[in-house]
Amino acid sequence: MTDLTEIIISLFKANSVLLSIMILSITLFGVIVGGLGLLEGYQYTSGNSRFSTRAATFTGAIMKLALGSAAAMGAVVFYRMAGTFSLADDPTTSNVLDYAQSGSITGTYCQQFQYSVTLIWMIIGTVALFNAARSAYRKSNGEMVPWSTPVYYLIGGIMCYFVNGITAMVANTIGLEVGLENMCKAFGMAGA
Image 1: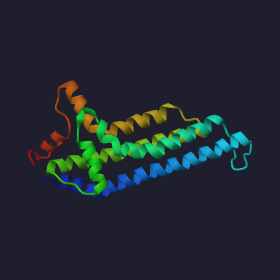
Image 2 (image 1 turned 120 degrees about the vertical axis):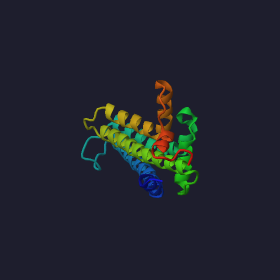
Image 3 (image 1 turned 180 degrees about the vertical axis):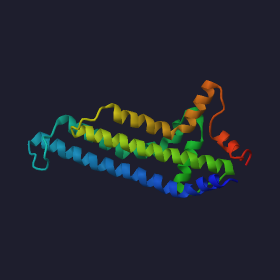
Image 4 (image 1 turned 180 degrees about the horizontal axis):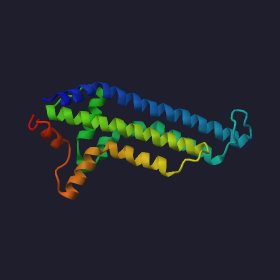
Protein backbone atom coordinates (compact mmCIF):
# COMPACT_ATOMS: atom_id res chain seq x y z
CA MET A 1 0.00 0.00 0.00
CA THR A 2 1.06 3.65 0.26
CA ASP A 3 3.95 4.82 2.37
CA LEU A 4 1.76 7.12 4.47
CA THR A 5 -0.55 4.31 5.56
CA GLU A 6 2.41 2.10 6.44
CA ILE A 7 3.90 4.90 8.54
CA ILE A 8 0.60 5.46 10.37
CA ILE A 9 0.18 1.74 11.03
CA SER A 10 3.78 1.34 12.23
CA LEU A 11 3.29 4.28 14.62
CA PHE A 12 0.44 2.40 16.31
CA LYS A 13 2.73 0.47 18.65
CA ALA A 14 4.52 3.59 19.89
CA ASN A 15 1.22 5.49 20.11
CA SER A 16 -0.41 2.78 22.21
CA VAL A 17 2.43 3.08 24.73
CA LEU A 18 2.10 6.88 24.59
CA LEU A 19 -1.65 6.68 25.27
CA SER A 20 -1.07 4.43 28.27
CA ILE A 21 1.57 6.80 29.65
CA MET A 22 -0.75 9.76 29.16
CA ILE A 23 -3.59 8.00 31.00
CA LEU A 24 -1.17 7.19 33.82
CA SER A 25 -0.03 10.83 33.93
CA ILE A 26 -3.61 12.08 34.25
CA THR A 27 -4.22 9.56 37.03
CA LEU A 28 -1.10 10.68 38.91
CA PHE A 29 -2.15 14.31 38.39
CA GLY A 30 -5.49 13.43 39.98
CA VAL A 31 -3.83 11.81 43.00
CA ILE A 32 -1.61 14.86 43.54
CA VAL A 33 -4.47 17.34 43.12
CA GLY A 34 -6.62 15.29 45.50
CA GLY A 35 -3.81 15.40 48.07
CA LEU A 36 -3.53 19.16 47.62
CA GLY A 37 -7.30 19.39 48.14
CA LEU A 38 -6.98 17.52 51.42
CA LEU A 39 -4.14 19.81 52.47
CA GLU A 40 -6.15 22.92 51.59
CA GLY A 41 -9.15 21.53 53.47
CA TYR A 42 -6.93 21.04 56.53
CA GLN A 43 -5.58 24.56 56.20
CA TYR A 44 -9.06 25.99 55.90
CA THR A 45 -10.51 24.15 58.91
CA SER A 46 -7.52 24.58 61.20
CA GLY A 47 -6.53 28.09 60.16
CA ASN A 48 -2.97 26.81 59.82
CA SER A 49 -1.63 28.14 56.53
CA ARG A 50 2.08 27.59 57.05
CA PHE A 51 2.21 25.28 54.00
CA SER A 52 0.77 27.86 51.62
CA THR A 53 1.43 31.39 50.46
CA ARG A 54 -2.27 32.15 49.93
CA ALA A 55 -5.31 31.83 52.11
CA ALA A 56 -7.10 28.49 51.88
CA THR A 57 -10.72 28.55 50.75
CA PHE A 58 -13.53 26.08 51.15
CA THR A 59 -14.44 26.16 47.45
CA GLY A 60 -10.80 25.68 46.43
CA ALA A 61 -10.52 22.60 48.65
CA ILE A 62 -13.77 21.08 47.36
CA MET A 63 -12.85 21.84 43.74
CA LYS A 64 -9.45 20.19 44.17
CA LEU A 65 -10.95 17.12 45.82
CA ALA A 66 -13.56 16.76 43.08
CA LEU A 67 -11.04 17.39 40.32
CA GLY A 68 -8.52 15.00 41.85
CA SER A 69 -11.00 12.17 42.19
CA ALA A 70 -12.39 12.78 38.69
CA ALA A 71 -8.90 12.80 37.16
CA ALA A 72 -7.66 9.79 39.14
CA MET A 73 -10.67 7.59 38.52
CA GLY A 74 -12.18 9.20 35.46
CA ALA A 75 -9.20 8.63 33.18
CA VAL A 76 -9.07 4.92 33.94
CA VAL A 77 -12.84 4.44 33.79
CA PHE A 78 -13.06 6.42 30.54
CA TYR A 79 -10.18 4.42 29.06
CA ARG A 80 -11.77 1.09 30.01
CA MET A 81 -15.38 1.92 29.20
CA ALA A 82 -15.10 4.13 26.09
CA GLY A 83 -16.15 1.40 23.67
CA THR A 84 -19.29 0.46 25.58
CA PHE A 85 -21.11 3.73 25.04
CA SER A 86 -19.62 5.00 21.79
CA LEU A 87 -21.94 6.68 19.32
CA ALA A 88 -23.46 4.75 16.43
CA ASP A 89 -22.47 1.40 18.00
CA ASP A 90 -19.06 1.58 16.36
CA PRO A 91 -16.79 -1.22 17.62
CA THR A 92 -13.62 0.56 16.44
CA THR A 93 -13.26 2.52 19.68
CA SER A 94 -13.40 -0.54 21.91
CA ASN A 95 -11.13 -2.47 19.56
CA VAL A 96 -8.56 0.32 19.57
CA LEU A 97 -8.54 0.42 23.36
CA ASP A 98 -8.18 -3.38 23.51
CA TYR A 99 -5.32 -3.28 21.03
CA ALA A 100 -3.74 -0.32 22.79
CA GLN A 101 -3.60 -2.36 25.97
CA SER A 102 -2.06 -5.39 24.26
CA GLY A 103 0.25 -3.37 21.99
CA SER A 104 -0.53 -5.43 18.91
CA ILE A 105 -2.80 -4.81 15.96
CA THR A 106 -4.52 -7.39 13.77
CA GLY A 107 -7.15 -7.41 11.05
CA THR A 108 -7.20 -6.34 7.45
CA TYR A 109 -4.88 -3.61 6.25
CA CYS A 110 -7.79 -1.15 6.19
CA GLN A 111 -8.79 -2.07 9.78
CA GLN A 112 -5.21 -1.59 10.95
CA PHE A 113 -5.22 1.85 9.33
CA GLN A 114 -8.57 2.71 10.95
CA TYR A 115 -7.34 1.64 14.40
CA SER A 116 -4.16 3.67 14.00
CA VAL A 117 -5.99 6.84 12.96
CA THR A 118 -8.51 6.38 15.77
CA LEU A 119 -5.68 6.00 18.29
CA ILE A 120 -4.11 9.25 17.06
CA TRP A 121 -7.45 11.00 17.68
CA MET A 122 -7.62 9.42 21.15
CA ILE A 123 -4.18 10.79 21.97
CA ILE A 124 -5.32 14.25 20.91
CA GLY A 125 -8.44 13.77 23.06
CA THR A 126 -6.34 12.71 26.04
CA VAL A 127 -4.26 15.88 25.73
CA ALA A 128 -7.49 17.90 25.65
CA LEU A 129 -8.83 16.09 28.74
CA PHE A 130 -5.59 16.84 30.59
CA ASN A 131 -5.82 20.50 29.59
CA ALA A 132 -9.38 20.55 30.93
CA ALA A 133 -8.16 19.18 34.27
CA ARG A 134 -5.22 21.58 34.33
CA SER A 135 -7.45 24.59 33.58
CA ALA A 136 -9.91 23.58 36.30
CA TYR A 137 -7.00 23.20 38.74
CA ARG A 138 -5.79 26.70 37.90
CA LYS A 139 -9.35 27.94 38.50
CA SER A 140 -9.38 26.21 41.90
CA ASN A 141 -6.21 28.11 42.82
CA GLY A 142 -8.03 31.39 42.31
CA GLU A 143 -6.55 32.25 38.92
CA MET A 144 -8.71 34.21 36.52
CA VAL A 145 -9.53 31.31 34.21
CA PRO A 146 -13.03 31.40 32.69
CA TRP A 147 -15.16 28.30 33.26
CA SER A 148 -15.61 27.99 29.53
CA THR A 149 -11.96 26.95 29.07
CA PRO A 150 -12.08 23.60 30.91
CA VAL A 151 -15.57 22.92 29.56
CA TYR A 152 -14.46 23.41 25.96
CA TYR A 153 -11.40 21.21 26.49
CA LEU A 154 -13.57 18.52 28.09
CA ILE A 155 -16.09 18.52 25.26
CA GLY A 156 -13.31 18.53 22.64
CA GLY A 157 -11.50 15.66 24.34
CA ILE A 158 -14.63 13.54 24.50
CA MET A 159 -15.39 14.29 20.86
CA CYS A 160 -11.87 13.19 19.87
CA TYR A 161 -12.38 9.87 21.66
CA PHE A 162 -15.61 9.25 19.79
CA VAL A 163 -14.58 10.62 16.40
CA ASN A 164 -15.83 7.50 14.60
CA GLY A 165 -19.30 7.76 16.07
CA ILE A 166 -19.44 11.51 15.47
CA THR A 167 -18.47 11.12 11.82
CA ALA A 168 -21.14 8.41 11.47
CA MET A 169 -23.71 10.77 12.97
CA VAL A 170 -22.64 13.57 10.63
CA ALA A 171 -22.78 11.20 7.67
CA ASN A 172 -26.31 10.14 8.56
CA THR A 173 -27.37 13.75 9.09
CA ILE A 174 -26.01 15.30 5.91
CA GLY A 175 -26.32 12.22 3.71
CA LEU A 176 -22.67 12.08 2.65
CA GLU A 177 -20.35 9.14 3.15
CA VAL A 178 -17.64 10.30 5.53
CA GLY A 179 -15.49 8.24 7.83
CA LEU A 180 -12.47 6.01 7.99
CA GLU A 181 -13.83 3.55 5.42
CA ASN A 182 -13.69 6.32 2.83
CA MET A 183 -10.12 7.12 3.86
CA CYS A 184 -9.28 3.51 3.08
CA LYS A 185 -10.86 3.94 -0.36
CA ALA A 186 -8.97 7.20 -0.90
CA PHE A 187 -5.67 5.50 -0.13
CA GLY A 188 -6.56 2.58 -2.39
CA MET A 189 -7.22 0.03 0.34
CA ALA A 190 -10.84 -0.83 -0.48
CA GLY A 191 -11.41 -4.47 0.39
CA ALA A 192 -7.86 -4.79 1.76
